[in-house]
Image (tube, rainbow, N blue to C red; front, top):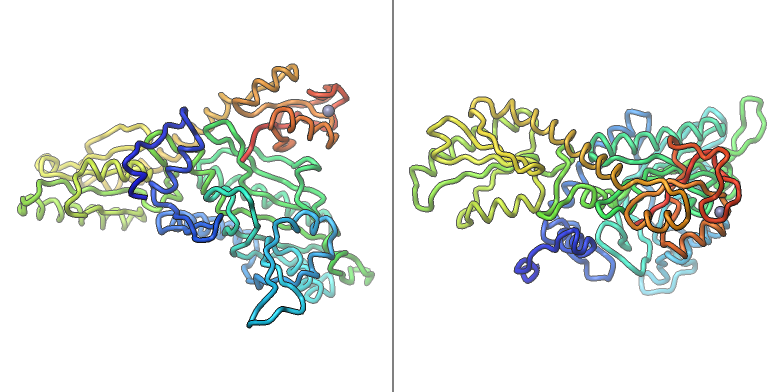
Length: 484
Ligand SMILES: [Zn+2]
């Protein structure tokens, strides 16, 4: 990547896509894997994922879910059992045909998602209504053979969590599906500072085999949508395919109702594209690998100044860590402070704390904010208290900024011509007839897709379809956008 650094980071306005493809490497989040479409997640990127994982996992456990682990190899025959599911996933399957130097009797798919292998196990684990609900989740890698790939957004192998639950009734399963959507939305906003629209997918955009797919959709800084988490209600589809039956309270055989829900390393793409600017990344404080970078500043070879500055830097770092703040002290020798500023700015560390001999004379450190560029002198004794407050304010400001950006790029359209124009610049709320063919035509003509039927939003009562003029098929206007 050394060659790339010689050139400037492209601005977002000039080429958003080039900006993204450049910053993921410059900020040292990833490197390319040797197999096309794979990525090596480097420590700075992996640490972000670990923070996503840790916080989301706590929310899953607080709502009664447990983690387990299923094998990554799935007998091919399992995929044949649910017709829509196999149709949806077959083109993306990577299949193992040989192992141990021999051709296998039955080819094995590398999991693209685990409904099938989990469905088979659940059929053995569930006998009676007393065995329900099953509320399980796994944190794993999955593989989907994609032709066009981009780090985090679309890779042949990615990391995610997949929750799989089984319930005695449709009501319970639907409540679970909605609960997990709420958890994703809360997580996105409260941890990622990523504002999202909660909604239901249209039939054409539904998960293969699901009766209902709920989604959270976020707007990137180029006006495009990124689906950031999904929660599916399968009804009895997978239970029928895998024979997940139980004796209900009346001792009658019934099929379980199942759900699945997932959030992946794509969410890192959402963070990058919701917050980043022309200088690089901006990390949401609650997920940032480092929340504060401390830069000791002294002239090279001034050993006395160095000793004084380093003593104070170490004390400040210790006091901050005691407050639970994730601190990085950049004490690398032989790099100018300017070079270090730029590097951490590019990596999007929310706060930078500078400590030099002049500051020490005045008993202060300089606290700089990555979002606004503002700098303030903070008394050394007050730093440990000031930083957590500054981080909390940073989160709010970041979320507010993202909301304002989304609102500025969200439109209503009175005609299909207006729709066509507006959808180039963001989200458009428009009534739609609900016909899959009409939805496909919109995609062909504008490249925009129905992101969701929002759970909250403008009513479409009495309205007619933006494209074909038939009566609206939904209660609300549909959110359309170009999407990743
Ligand atoms: Zn229509």
